[in-house]
Length: 473
Image (cartoon, rainbow, N blue to C red; front, side, top):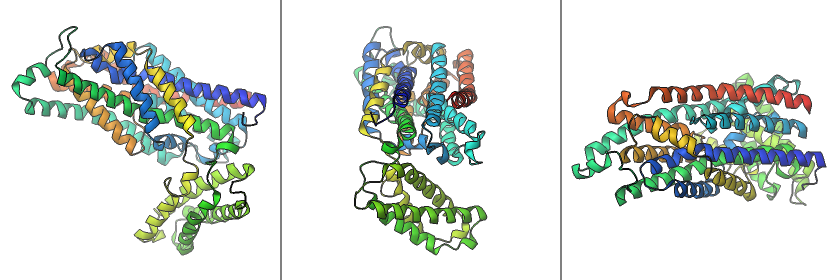
């Protein structure tokens, strides 16, 4: 397979298996976020709920695109993503995967709804920081901090918004719903009794949406992991999109060169002046490579990793240069430049991609994982966050808020935590009913502690594992 030596092939298989295992664990770890409300309101039987959630997760991965996946990949520095040493790449992916799986299994075992997203982000940061301590880094940035800050803001704000929006939605429902409907909507469900058909329909619909958007967001994280593995271990095949004619890059390169030609480097900050010089050289290298590859219509295997590095660095450097006040570019020039750099029609369409078989593999892993192991966290979400039994209004409010926020985040290509959003939504709905005293302090404290510890523990785990694997390999 891919013409690899036996030991490298075995490492590739282990890495791919670990990525699928992470997504499988993610499935049963996060299933509770979608199915707890329909189970505790008697809208669906548990078995039916988890199977349906698995199907919706599967569909979400297939139809969710790859924007979030590429955001995960691009958290790491370019130098780490284009390391020519296969064993270094294996050390990277095994460290971040094993640290994520260890923490996810630990929190699942204790029934704590912690965030798989936080775990993965922390593991990636740990690997990047560990890389910065090695001579290979040559003083380069350990992490793409700009992307990391953007991701961190999304993960931080989402639970706060989930909590607040659930309170607001509960308030709106109380004021707008007729009294005869309000009685059934805000009362605890009768044991083993299905809710009215319209309420049941709303709850099943919101459960389906949360499951679908969970697949479209969290599933993409698995796709990003697989692409990290493939780019690192078999770069000749996957460093850049294999089926695109390199000649298609020429219009983008020429447009960027026209922009660099009008820039006055003396007006730029020193750091951006250096970036401009590097970009001009990288554009010239790319153009030379393309001129030599026009006849075959393919990028030579030995050049693929270099092409990926050039494309990523050109994109990163030019995006920073246009933010420099000394650039003095017009709005139309900036628009043209961004068009030439974008993943839809620019240079990034060569690097930001995922084969269909990768997406399908993750969809199956997440969908199957969703169907098992859900009970521990369902009990926490359904029974232990609030002191009262979950009402129809609370379940629908929390699920609707979660589905909306995750869907918007996926559209913006930002990773968010389904666990954080929905658990905070449940908490908000409980507070909206009877105030802060309606929360179970012990459970909330344990969940908060897991949330606080997730990043530092996963960073420490992946940091340690990466250094260890680099030493043994």
